[in-house]
Length: 624
Image (tube, rainbow, N blue to C red; front, side, top):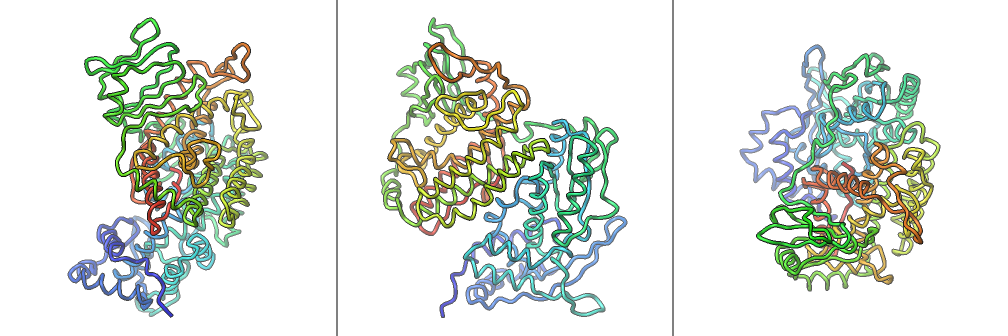
């Protein structure tokens, strides 16, 4: 029988070695053996490659090492350098698949997240009106992780990757050499193996979901947990539910560290002292200020022109409204009867400046795109892929990514008061997720996406203040302020996705999930699906809950149905959207760091590769 395909490529092993050498994982104990391994690096990596490709790889025993840290001793089970390299290679394969499953509560051992992010999450929850907190940790976390259960969860995530799972089995089945006591069986996960934090997070994600689904906002850094809530009663209830959830996993809370406290009294979490105002929540902590910004033009009867190297927006009486250097403009979005001079059109098309045209209400009309290169081969690839198993796999991943991000949105913004609406919605959406892999056609996938939306939007509507609540999605026309804001920003996002697809040589008309039969740019609708809850829904929720959007943000027009957003409301919405799109993040996509706007373009690039190269796969973005 032929050996299974080997995912452990030489490049992957070399990258894994660099991770071991550089000590990226703070929980890995340094080893003098690293220098010896590096002396014969090429030979060692070639041996790894050969053993893994022929299924002959077997790890060595772990070595127990006791480290003294201040007033306590931490016991590590340290792998040999060769096995750390293999474990890191497994980690590189598993992380893009597992990370989207971890939800919004876990901040440790995830790419692009760390202590500062967890601290900021607690500070934001405090500023949202949560005056109390439940604090606890997990007693002997790594030694008590149910390994067999962790293995089953990983198997479900790495469906079909049997070779990787067989290597994981060997790594989990090692003995540990204890000084002066000989070889012993390892209890739980070895603290010191690069793979252990991923498996621990995978198990504890179930703990996170238990509490999040009930409206308790959890911030968990490894086994250190903080649950900010509105009052003392909720804090005690959160603590009881946390204890119950841990026991369901056959784990236990640390007896001394389970506490209820108020921000007024102050407490410590992750080395930070929290009080009523300190540390401050910095909303724009990771916002990247671009050299070229988006210019939104909506003054009816006005125009955009260019003169002496400057872009000028004028009203219908030729009064100047905006006058900026052309180097400061990277994108133009025009609403309604805004004119574009011939000079602006020529400058934009020759300098790759995006121009999106929308109706006065915000409906997408079209985009100006310059003459691209290498489009013919990409479009041929799109046509060949249409209706194929490859296209179905991409469409499935898109629906899964969207539903997961919708669940995270409800978990992140849901509170105890919303439990009756949010908990059943999340339960329904979770039931739909495994059905996506069983769907045989894109119409079946669209049916599942629609069923998820039917559960999602009523729950989303319950998260806004009572005066703005809605129980369904209304589009043409929108019947309330939140729906009008959602439609408005979906149009903006849609335009960005169209431009991103053109930039990588794809034709937006040919979709893998949405049908081109109704004469819409189907592939851009596909691309934007996972970004709807990640960007737009979050922006609208925050605006509604902060008071920036109110019933007064709507206006009506004679002989027209539905509502229209006021100028002030549109300005607030666009400002918040730009802030969100300029948020810099890392770890949401494998090996990529950039603003969320750059993530849209990166996903378009990955989509182009997946459509035209059968060896490439497309995966959704993890919420950051």
